Length: 383
Image 1 (cartoon, one colour):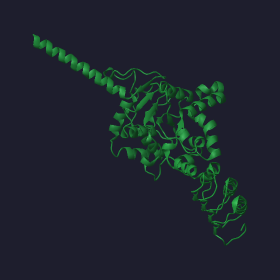
Image 2: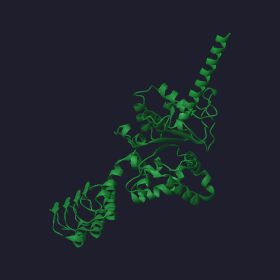
Image 3: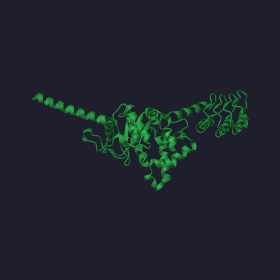
């Protein structure tokens, strides 16, 4: 069969070929270029046989479907077979039901299809921060997310063909907090702000951070994941993940104005639509750009086509002026530069502010005002 040019379908159901037979089949698949469908159901194939088949499928370019139902394949081999679906663009389907590793296999595939599962743990972020400090040493203070991405994240992604998040959690990790931030901020400062935001939380959250959630590599690899092109914006990984978040964290910095980036504006508006703002939002980091003013029309994007698509979608329900007014309010939140009427306390680079505090403070001010008027009315009545 290695050199056969006519057989396109191979059905060996219920033949008990075992690992030895599976390995012989794998050896054949290395050179065969015509077989497209293989059915190995109920054959007592274990991990050795499954690993051999997975290795063969790394180079085979003809097989499109593989049925391994009702065998003895465990989690380790199930992961290898799931990974083949990432690297082999010809192979479309692997059936692994009625195997010990079947549930694991399905969980892996489900996680890859669901951006809500592309989070990293708080603890993992701290580990990456420690790793970056050791790698960059004296220069760490000035290194940005772009530097960490290049040295730490991309090598993992290119080796595994998966995002950093899915490389460290094959079955994914469900999002708790969606993080909006800039790639040009110092990475250490970014992590410090997150530390401060959850300093007094006994249970630390799982964080959805773009660099870790998406497969990092070439421009083409990034673009294929962003939901641009023909894919609706609300089906992009950013929006789908944000919709699944229980809380929203905005990390400001002293180098880059978040409100000057179209993807950040997009995230702000969708966070509002999903009712994460104000009560489920924390804003942390310095208010350096609180006094700035920029129209969403002038916001930047790595790919100009992203900006066109995002603005087209956002202006379906809001005018440009309405978006700009909302961004102006959001930009100044918790700022020492904000007018006294809101009485919001100033935040430093390491302090965090809950968005709901502005509502509480305004309510308190209104109550104090009402009480003052009431006292004046009573005094007038006495006179």
